[in-house]
Image 1: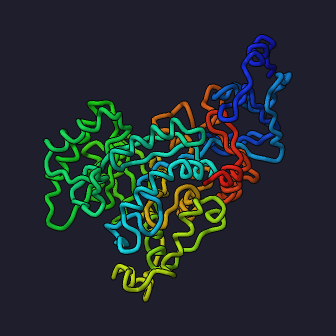
Image 2: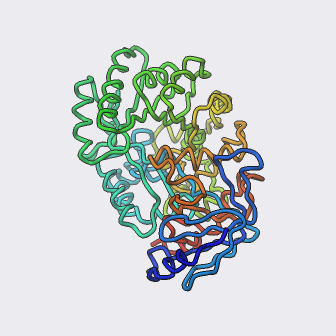
Image 3: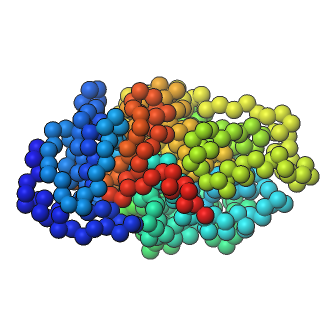
Amino acid sequence: MILRNALLAALVALPLAATASPAPITVINGATIIHPARSGAAAIEPGATIVISGDRIQLAGAGITLELPQGARIIDARGKWVIPGLIDSHVHFFQSGNLYTRPDAADFNAVVPYTEEVARNKARLDATFKVWLASGVTGVADVGGPFWNFDVRDRALASPAAPRMAVAGPLISMIDRPQLDLGDPPIVKIASPEAARAFIARQLPRNPDFIKVWFIHQPGDDLAAQEAIVKAAGDAAHAAGKRLAVHATELVVAKAALRAGADLLVHAVFDAPVDEEFIALAQHNRALYCPTLYVMDGYGEALSNTWKATAIEAARADPEILAAMDDLNEIAPEKLPPAVAGLMKKPQRTGAPEIAMKDLRRIVDAGIDVVMGTDAGNIGTLHGPSIHREMRLMVDAGLTPLEVLRSATVNGARTLGLAGQVGEVQAGMLADLLILDADPLADIGNLAKVHRTIKAGVVYDPQALMESLD
C-alpha cells in the first residue's frame, strides 16, 4: 500500500505538536500487530506499519510503504508487538486501594480519618490517572461513586495524561453504608421504585454513562420487591439512553438483575454455577459480564497483613499507596479494628472464587462478552497494575491469552460506549495503542512489558510517567 502524495502533503502541513498533544504524524515500523477481535493465525500480523495522524490511526497493516513526511515521529518497533490500549471495565476513583479506603469493611478511622483519606484521593487524581497509563490502560469505567465522580471524568478530560473514562454516579442500594457518607455518599439506600426514579432524575443532568445498582439481597428480603426497584432504575436509565450496571453476586440476584434489564453485571456469580436461565437472560440482554476474580483476595490478603506487591505493582503502582500497604506492621494493636486483629492472628484462606473460575469458560463459550475488570480502589486492589493479577486469574480459569486480551480491548470498548472507535488496531480508530516488548499471546504476563503507551495519538513512556508523580 502506498501513501499518496496528496495525503502526504496534507499530513506535512499539520503544525508540530506541543508536548501534551499528539505529534502531527507518528509512524510505527516493523511491529507485529495483535488483532484481539480475530481468531487463530488471523490475529497475528507481523511486519506491520501503523500511521497515526492526530488522534486517529490512518493506516495499519503489513506491506505499507510511504515516504516519511517532514516532522514525523518514527518509532522502530521491530521485535515488538502492538495491541489496542487496555480497558479496565470496573474501577472506583473514590477509593485508593489502601487500608483506609472502605471504613464500612475495616474501620481505621482511629489511624487515618476517612475524611483525610477522601481528601487525599481527590488531591491525588492526576497521579492516579498516570499510573493507569503507565500500566498500559487507556480506558476505564468507574462504575459508581459520589456525585464528585462526575468531576473526576471532567478532570480526566482536561488532563494531559489520563485514560478515557465512563462513569456512574452514586449507587442505588438495598442497604445503607453510613460509614461512607461525608455529605456526598457513594451508596444511597433506595426503598421504592418511585425513589429510584427520582434519584436517577438527580443524576441525569450530570450525564452518567451508567446507572448503577448495588443489589444486595439478604435473608428475609423480598426479592420481587427489590427486583421492582431495579427494574424501575433500568427503565428510567434506558428511557434516558443510559445503561444499567448491577452488582449482583448470587445467582438468583443476578437473574433478577438481568430480568430487570441489566446491561453490565459488574461481578461474577459467586455462590452457585450459572444455569441455562442465566445464560439465556444474559444473551437476550447482550449483557457484559465482568468477573472481578481477584478483589476479594485483595481484601483478605491486605487485612491479614499477607499482601505483597508483585514486581509490576512495585514498579507501576502509586508509591503513596504502596507505602500504606505496609502500615499494619506499624499500627498499635489497640487501634486495629477487632476483625483485622483477628485476621492477623490467624490469616484466612484466600483464593479466587472457585465457582466463578469454573463458570468463566462456559460464559465465554455461550457467546457472552466477558470484560476484564479489577474493582480497583478496593482494599488490596491497586489502581493500574492490579490488572495483571486479574488477567492471570482469567488465564488460570481456562481462557486463552487472546480471549483475555479480547476482554480487555474490543469487549471493553463496549463498556466505554466506544465500540468501533477503540479496542482494535485498524484505520479510522482512535489511536489508543500499546507497544510491548514481548508477545502477549505467549504469556499473559507479557502485557506488563509496556514499552510505550499511546493514548489519542500521544506517546507516553511508562517510566517517565512514574517519575513525574509528585
